[in-house]
Length: 108
Image 1: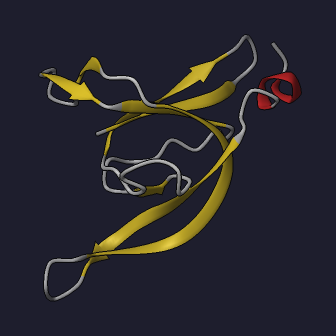
Image 2: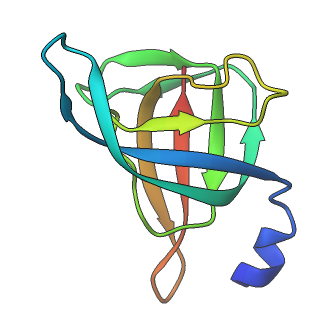
């Protein structure tokens, strides 16, 4: 499926903010802020976390980008989803025959 056709299935817009550092109080600070077409699916599923331990994800987000977010980054979902800023549990690229097609982000 081509990227333009795939984007027809992405009715939402999400915002990704890149983690930068922590301030003196241990609160995270973020640098760049980008919005992306997305598809948000809220359905519980078990995934393998970064340490290989099985964890429960409340949903997943398909992003129309080739940039893979880190678990330290912040994602903001549309207002109709609760919570609007869930933690990122894992993210990985999905490739086609040429390159990265889209990103799947699992959220808590």
